[in-house]
Length: 565
Image (tube, rainbow, N blue to C red; front, side):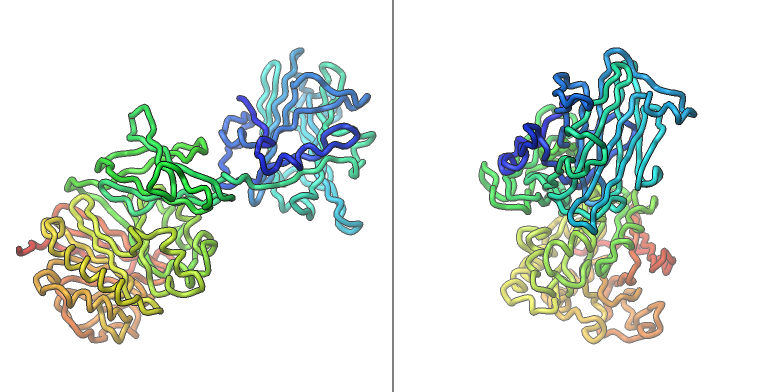
């Protein structure tokens, strides 16, 4: 596999080639994100192409420069590990001592790797990691069980992969980490090294590693959201301000179509780190492949106009508990769902994009490759950066939308933030809502599901004043056409059965509380730490209500109703 040095990045050239005694002693090593490696020693993952390359060596005994390129050491970091790949050629054949003969360790093809820190007299340290091609290890100041090693040996070459937790190294800054390595080649009776050292413990003569994040490195995402029958949206964030594009094609097609990010024109905006693309004019029920120029091919599937059985998930009020979300998403039963709805209060306050990534989005991207839909709750209005929601997730600048999938028409409304939503925004939503319920798509759907952070139970219990105003702006026939409402906000499981005037809840505070309006459809509110799994069949919606710690709270069946035109 062809390897390329990261020193081609223009902004970093000036710090790469600092020389010591006429020889390179500092190299720029990338810090990458979303790293996925299977440690098998083969170096066949695309991420190795982004690694820094160490291939200028000297003979350890004479310090004479080695002219061949038989030795390559590759390196990169992520937020938790340092990754080292080794690719060594030996034309006369690899030598491996018996695996149970430690006394002949240094007589095998082997490698010694050193990390060190010399920041101050009290923070100096070094770790030695040495291994032979047969898997025998010899280490100082780091236990052999503290890192991962895998080797792959051929007749005239060997390769290896090491994954070393940063927590097992000493303290260092991004430009202060010292490094050195030796390759022992018994077939030619030589050792080669990166730096000109007299002794392996001459830490002050080790080379330096300068750790950086490439500007075009994708550090968050991508996330695929608001997928409909003929469109889909994507977001991702890069380390620096660079132009970005998405490349997509229908599965089975040969050529990719390119769409620049953050613009309606033909050229991507080069002054952004957060990138957004909406793909339009897609085919419904079609699998698409896409990449972001990073060598990783991903897929998504548009929604379907066909009437078919399917399932979807709904949860709300996560409040940044990403471990709870991870448990829900990784459950095998939930993995079969077509989509997931996140109905507000996914974080407790909007102080910027970082809290969104840490609170739930990183977990969602890692564990969920299907469409998701995220609408605001009252907590998305809080904090000094509530606009972060719109920057990352809004559909045409709004938090409300409607669409169909396999016979179910979904209507997501945005109401009642902790800060007044604004008359213009609400009036636009009211007009949109009236148009939606007058549409043939709404009237002809098998089921019509309303999603709102606030449940329509009582303005006294749970709020929802603006949701009530929206429902009051349409006719009774249109209100009665809804088959189900899913909501959150109250942090308790609450159920309102059709035309009943009391609430049911597993919490005594809410059980038997009277509401103020007998709606003609059931209203279900999600418990804090729980979720709902909804199965759509030909004749009914089957809702399984799960509480915190995967406790089964209820099962509800909604029969199909006929819309009266």
